[in-house]
Image (cartoon, rainbow, N blue to C red):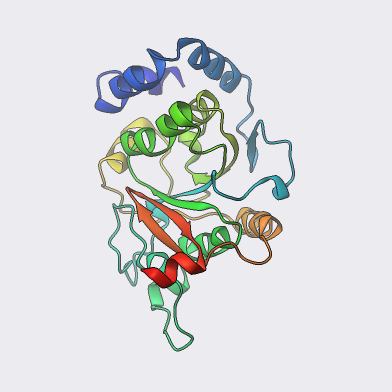
Length: 245
């Protein structure tokens, strides 16, 4: 954790975090660092103030975050890799005759995003630490845009990521990748700049746990039929709104 912080101080993410989070909210930041330091990240899932059931997840201020590095490489993702895009999710609802591209059939982002929609949660394809700060942590802290989140990310990032969530008051469930993930700062920094040749994977038990969690959080009738991209985040779009697009 401290190694990550020291390395980041000389980079844009570090001073942006200091300016947007630490300076205006020093008490919350110290409390978040302290709380993060007491957590055990060695398990298959880490909960942050998230003792509630999946039924307490979902709706307008819930967010599902997945790493861009989950995107398939062979065949390649039709949306490209180092970006916040998902052509499949952004074009929902599909007609019954629409063929699912081969790359999308095997993609965890497609599956997780589709299940998130049934829970009425926003979806965010995570790229750089700076974007996560500006798109998730700062809006949660400044305006309460997000209050609950489910995230899949590399284990190396879990503790600093938890600090951002805790400072923003976000109840979170964090699932680590099993393969292809960043294991040190050098590898993490390359991925943060968009250089990630490996495809990360969520192990089958965790993927199943995420699937069941989101299914349990699903709302009836479904609150949305598609997504609308606002900035870098995909927000649920109700049927009536979708018809007007």
